[in-house]
Image (cartoon, rainbow, N blue to C red; front, side):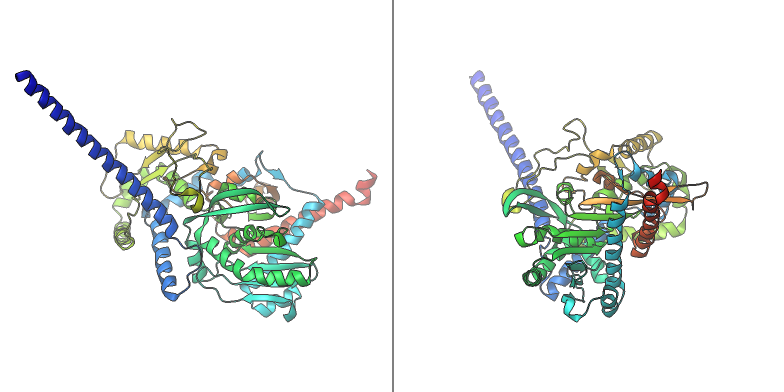
Length: 531
């Protein structure tokens, strides 16, 4: 009898244990499923087109502001912004030589001179359209009122200003898009969430390849809006002038919009020869989409311009490097005793807490940075094909090795927390190891499970200033066709913002043209021919 009772008790215990484990596992599975569903819903909830009503516009603008604040002051400690970036610039020095490495191809000769001459004219057209009154733009380009096919002068949220003109000299229809010159334009540029986008490559009217990826939300929505207006207009223009070509161009945000718009236009047989010139393009496409445009998009980058390299992932990487640097140990105590710093940092922490409560999502802790390298680019990205599928591995891989996973950098709290010396040394060494990863592994970099690295589109040519003398002012300007993986990392420089503006592009381009023109003259001179 005692044996039977013991057996019954054991069986009952086993049943209870089984039920407990089943309930726990089902709870975990439901939590993971809900988490994935929330991530997918977050991705889908960003609009595919510009807002149609003022209420939608207000809602989207509010969300964009919260998104931007969450990615900046919501993640960056105030001390790193105030001291760390400047300190990091001094420690690393100039990195222009990295763009002239062995993987880059130096461009020279009369063919390059001809290409840059064309780029100079188009850049001047972009400058006049963006910064000058429209009549001045028409006068500079030699256009009359009959040359204007379409002109949208007023920018709205995800609806940038643009124009389409008929250029008789080059026998082209030029579609010029203005960059971020107003507050509304900057809101469009700031809505940098990743949304699915795909490009269909046609060959003689048939689908040859489907390229999957993600794109910048605001830039993609603006490109789709322009496409709706421009396609009927261009169709009518080409029916009247069938021997004309279509060229799209823009600067900064306008360059990113133009690149994605060119992808959209080329999916129609009548616009299959459309090309794009992107000046200082925003990083707006994932790797495979950016690579697919090499045959019809030319991106021009000037010296230390930060915009072509700036995205959520590259910003997280530079943040991890700044937070892991040794300067924090030297200035931490002084910053803690600084009343102004404590006052500003206190208000920033309050803003973070308000952002979290207003947006309904958790604002990332500014003292924990997750840095992951390497994940498969062949993800199902289109809604119709994804159907809720996600990457099945929790740990992101580097070159297929599952042993190499994400590295977490834990930065010290400047106000209250103390971290021992051993932890700080481990954090700093891990930061150096991450900083020294090869550039060819950066194209698959992800931060967290859902962030994707954006790159500048198409073929990239970079105007580089290399030292050429004993002083810093002695520089030799050269131009290189550079590999895309160089733009997965932000290279800090004192002039990284100044080099982004069109006057700086014009100045560097004119210097390069003078040098190339002199080289071509020397090669074709009678003395050189006789030799």
